[in-house]
Amino acid sequence: MEGKRKNMLLRQMDHLYEQIVEHTSQGIMVTDADACILFVNRAFTAITGYSKDDVLGKTPRLWQSGKHGKPFYAQLWTSLLETGRWQGEICYSICCRLTD
Image (cartoon, rainbow, N blue to C red; front, side, top):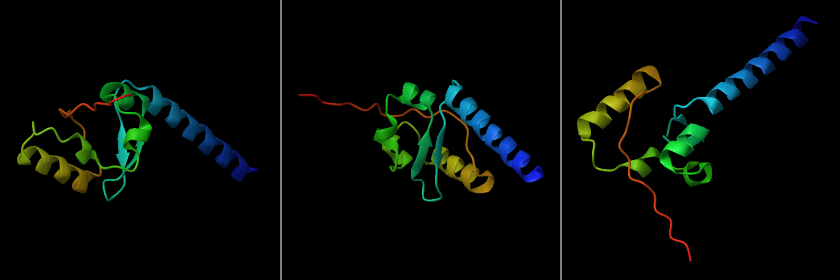
């Protein structure tokens, strides 16, 4: 019984975590160790204008706008490597889609 209860609680916590991540106003992007984008939340897509399909499997280099210098990216990568996360704001280039 204890194992079933523990599994149920873990599923509930996973669901709660999903709800928090999807409903926060902060854009969230998750990458793997190779900087390949694995996940973005709704706020990320609303803020950037990129859909999940636009970014999944790509790297954040997609947004390099030239507005940040090498020290900015050095600090960003140092934080990622030392703590596993980075928090901040980036000026990015906006995507343009041509339609027929």
